[in-house]
Length: 95
Image 1 (tube, one colour):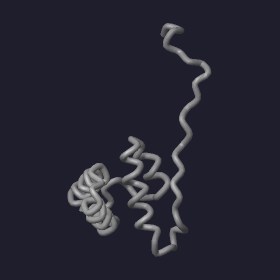
Image 2 (image 1 turned 90 degrees about the vertical axis):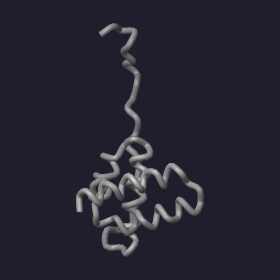
Image 3 (image 1 turned 135 degrees about the vertical axis):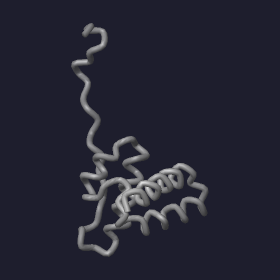
Image 4 (image 1 turned 180 degrees about the vertical axis):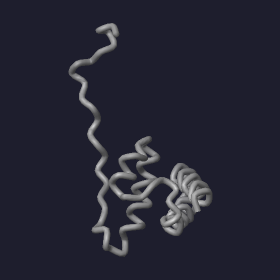
């Protein structure tokens, strides 16, 4: 590879930080659903999956994602609504 295309000083971007409550918290699933949506929005679903222990489209989070979708539609957050719909389509396939 040409040295013109190599940046030896480049550093990888830091891993995203997902602020999640304790897994035993009653709010964990909601926070995990948001983390998966945010990970997908940033193009890094894998980090969100690793942080939460849930996979994209996990049917166990469908209720939380439906609530995220409802709020996003009410508040005009089109990108969040789009990602929530994609999650729910995947959850229906997986379920």
